[in-house]
Image (cartoon, rainbow, N blue to C red; front, side, top):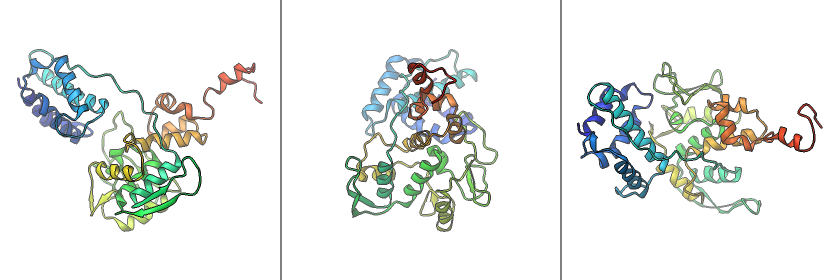
Length: 315
């Protein structure tokens, strides 16, 4: 059976039942460029490793991606092959060789970096930074503002909501994405009736510093806060990259870094790990393993023991 047929079957029969069927389409587009002329029996470790090299090297004429992105695309191929075998389209199972998982990202933004990024989205570029000198920033040349990026940045920094969930936010109750309930002060991250996935999206109170912005955006937009010319966008990439370039930040600053930043700032302020986990919709283990070292209480018990104190003894 041709790999192209397996991917088409998966896209028609299985993808519509998934939480994010659009991601399958994005992945299939790249998978077909490499595996489209193959039959399933030709998939082996060599072809999978060649795919990773191709995607990470930008050999297909497109932007190079990280190993993690290539892995997620191969996971879609793995799911498609598994689904075809389960549905008896394949006689034997076909195994996909995946690259190692990337270690958790530890990159997060200092407050001065976040200010520069937000200013760049608004078209204001600093000509002097306070990152090292801590002197007042001198703002320089003006560029065309991208207000939808600025709104995206503020929502991500204040709520730690995932990229795709922010882009799907509406102003009213709907079944395809979350919404802001301004009367009750709650932000719903999932649409009404949407399935709960492993990436939990619990409703959260709208932070006090964000609420005035949200009320103002409600008067300026039609469908949702992150829209461009009245239309919600599917992916915050080109305009966000432009803002990072204007702000003088590196390629490692992606939309997901804003979620890391929100978690880090909360822990640095002494917010308990369990509360951060509930607010972000993550497990306490993930918060502890990924961000726990940012907490002022990190390894406090070990420190007391080193100083000869018992666990119940306090200064």
